[in-house]
Amino acid sequence: MVINMSKKFPYGHDVDKYIDKAIEELKYTYPWAKKELFNKKYEYIIEKNNNRYQYAYIFYWDNSSPEKTVLNVNGEEFIKQIIWQQEYTIQEYNKIKDVFIVPGQEGKILHDWHLENYEFRKHELGGYSVFCQAGDRVNGGSRTFFIPPSYFDGNYEEFLDKYIKLVTPSFGFTKEELSKIPELKEFLGY
Image (cartoon, rainbow, N blue to C red; front, side):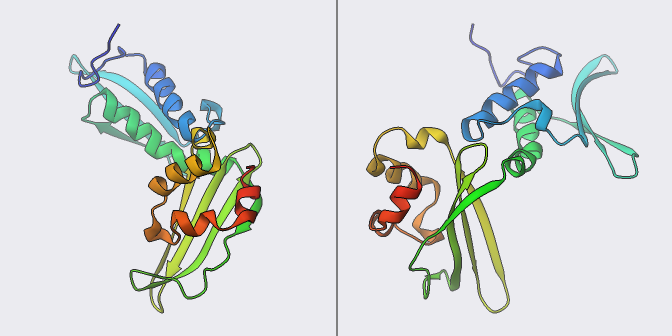
């Protein structure tokens, strides 16, 4: 059976079906994702209002006063909203176990910013991520990329091909530069 995601309620009015779909999507990059790890401050609902169903979520502030937000979206957008709200909590649950700092960062300039940190991280529940940080004298920024487990299917060359599409060289290193670091290859289990 093919489900039309442009339809407002492709999985009916059971909110758990949408949460399950969000978890399924999260598991592509975060295999440890499960509902029990969700941020408990969010509650997702599908409610009937004036004879029409609508998506909504309730956010529970620290002082326990709830705030409901009604979403005028379709099923696909509701699932994306759940993922967006839960992704950080899922990431934070899998603590860092080991770090490999990529050598050769000194003097690298990224769009007028200096590369300050580029490291691969191995996590306790499995999986890898990459942390990139850059800045100038006034501004700075950082970003973490979790590497989907499917990227590790195949050899190291194939891994680098997929990886460089996820973390473009504009974040610091090209495929050619990374392929010349044997310690990185070993850290990643190749």
